[in-house]
Length: 125
Length: 428
Image (cartoon, rainbow over the protein chains, first blue to last red):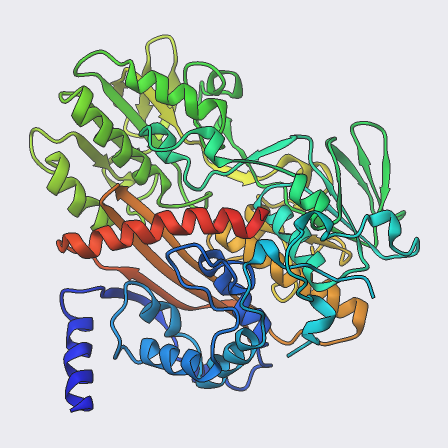
């Protein structure tokens, strides 16, 4: 049943919903031998939409700070594989390897689920 | 993780006012980062540098007391937002991120002495310098055009501010059935979809208030990003491709390149010698790196500043980083989005040098948005990696045109959310 549902969803993703033209695409595996990109460097690419440290809690695009690690990974893999149709996240998740998605999950799940504007930096020791 | 989270950021509930340390409280011998330019690249670098490192002394040299965001400024033309909505001050950089902001113009780099000289005669010492001056306009590429004309009746409005308001006034007070000419520049230039977004927003206003007016886009290139989306929308809303089209587009392959402006006759002259008279002429000139990059020799005889593709250190001097539109960072596009992600990466490089930690490899995205109307957004996702000693494009995906009004509206709401959250990511 789950598989049928996923197939149906992926068809919706492919037809008439938010599909995209592929101008250029190289799978993440092609970069597997390069030095790794840290979870923070990956995760800081999300901030323009999801907020600094993924911590805007009052916008349409959801906060990522403090997100459950496994939920993050499951969602990102579903976006990447196109089985969960979205407006833009299928495209956003597509270039990352599974390991990179796990590193991003480590990064965000360890950040406090607090609005960025109320966080403090470098509290006096 | 590269660094202990508690080193970087510690939650302590409310009280934004007490967030930052006064920079005088830091060690006098703290290393110094000086940033020339308080636009998106410079401001993002100051903020993200402080997030990574509590000790570094950060100075931003920027003559303007306020910054007006270009992203979202086409909406000013359509009465959707005001310039004030797009305007921020440097207070947060000062008070929350502990950056010193010197409101003077940087005029010279003393490379040997590691100083920047300012218009007010200061010598500002640095350990690392980051230069983010944005582009400048090559007025002479269009004979007869000039900065003085741009500040008068022929605004390019490619830097949000007074010229945006001037352009708005000009096209909104045009005679019934008047013609607007937009001359779109050749690549590379800041924000590739913006001329077409601008035309779309003007057309939406004109359709309501001056329905027989026309917009003619004369293009110095043969195609443009989101072309299928824009043309589809224009067909749907503005009779594109018919005799009654409100928007027409002429690519360079059809003689669209504007070579000359005859301001007295309100006429542009194309590469084919065609003379086109218009009520409003909006020439968006070709661009090159900002003047400071030329004055300081950073451009090394080129139009943009050559940089090391891994860390954005200039080819001229490894202690001087160059980021944003001014950097020659092919194949990256010139957007504020890319500038902000270059800034975050440069902060990693400097922090790595201070702490001896390897920041690993970079990855930069340009997951950007554009709009054709308040009911129609579009997205592009570019991913760039450092691979084989250069910057490579891993991915470019562009939203396909859709006639599904729900999808188009959702894309528009994503675009609006992005404009807001992006501004906050730089200045909040």
